[in-house]
Amino acid sequence: MQSISEMIQPIKWHSEQLHLLDQRLLPLQQVWLGFDYPEDVSNAIREMVVRGAPAIGVTAAYAVVLAAREAWNKAGINWKQAMIEPLAKLAASRPTAVNLTWAIEKMTAVYLNQPETYSAEAALLEAAIEIHQHDIRSNQTMGKLGADLIDADSTVLTHCNAGALATGGFGTALGVIRQGFADDKIKHVYVDETRPWLQGARLTAWELMQDNIPCTLQADVAAAALMASGQIDWIIVGADRIAANGDVANKIGTYSLAVLAKYHQVKVMVVAPLSTIDWQTASGKQIPIEQRPSSEVTHVANQQIAPEGINVVNPAFDVTPAELINAIVTEAGVVLSPSTSTMKNLHKQN
Ligand code: MRU
Image 1 (cartoon, helix red, strand yellow):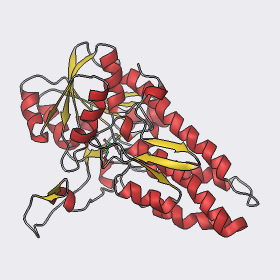
Image 2 (tube, rainbow, N blue to C red):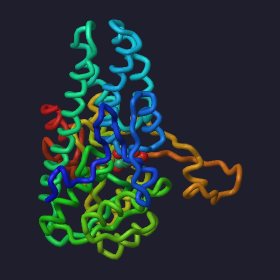
Image 3 (cartoon, protein in one colour):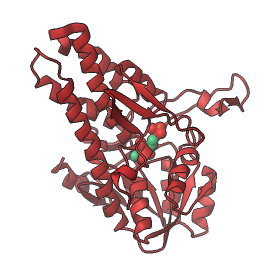
Image 4 (cartoon, protein in one colour):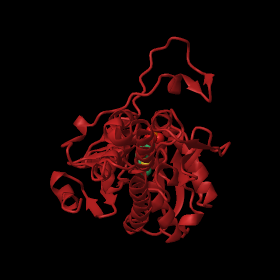
C-alpha cells in the first residue's frame, strides 16, 4: 500500500500559499495553481479546479487561512468582522457537498476562539492541516472497512471520481478499490465515463492506471448491459451529502446505477467520511442539488456538439434512496441497510 508521500494529492500548502492541481486539465496536463486570496479559491471551487466533496472541504479550510491573512492585513483588530463576507462567498461556491460548510464551521469555531489583537493565521493553518491529514487517515480506515465487505476476485463498477483527487488523498470509493486490489478482493474495475464532466474518463481512469489497477472505461449507458451480463459484483461510489436517513446525494447517474443494481442483484456501497453526513437534513428530498452551466452538456472539450440555443438541464447530482444502498462505509464504521434507525449508531460518534 502507498505511503502518504507516494499518493496523488490534489491540495498542497507551501510557501505560504494554497496550491491546487488543476483538475480541468487532467489527464493531459498536470498544472498547479497557487492561491493567495479566498475569493480566488471560491472561484476555483465553482469552476472545478478542485472538486469532490472532501477535497472541497479541505480546500475551504485552507481558504479560511487565506481569509484570515487578508482580513488582518485589511482590517487589523476588526479582522473577525472582515472574515464574514469572504466566508459567505466561499460557502456559496458549491451548494451540494456538505463538506464545504462543515469545514468552514470547524474553522470558524477555531478563529472565534482567537484574540482580536493578533492574526489567527498560524492557529488556522494548524487546524487546516489537521482537517487535511484527518481526511487522509479516514480514507485509509474506510478503505480497510470497505474492502472487508468484498469477496475475493470481485469485479466492481465505479462512477465519477471519488479518488485521491476528490479528497485530501487516497480516496473514498477509490480508497476501498485500492485496498481491495491490494488484498486480492478486487480483480477488475469498470469505470463509468460520467457525463457530462467526464470525471470517470479523465480522473478515475488516470488514477487507476497510475496505480496499475486493471480497469476498463465504458460509456455510462453501458452499465446496464454490464450488470445484466453478471460481470459486476459491487457498485462502489462516494457521496456529496448523506441525509440522516441514509439517502445519498452523489454525482448525477448514481441513482440510475442503484436502480439497475437492485434489478440485477448487484450490491451498492457508498463510501464517505462523517464530514459528508448532514444530520440536520432528515431525508434526501431536502438536499439542495446544484445546477451546472448548460455548456457542460452542449460542449465537449470546448467543442460545441449540440444545436445553438437548445434547452439544457444539468443537475450535477441526484439522490439515491437509502433502500437501494447495501452499505454506507465511514471511518467510524459500516452501516448495513441504511435507514434513520441504523444511521443513529454513527450519529453517537459524530
Ligand atoms: O461535481 P464533482 O466532481 O465535485 O462531484 C463529485 C462526486 O460526486 C463525488 O462522487 C463525491 O464528491 C465524493 S468524492 C470522494
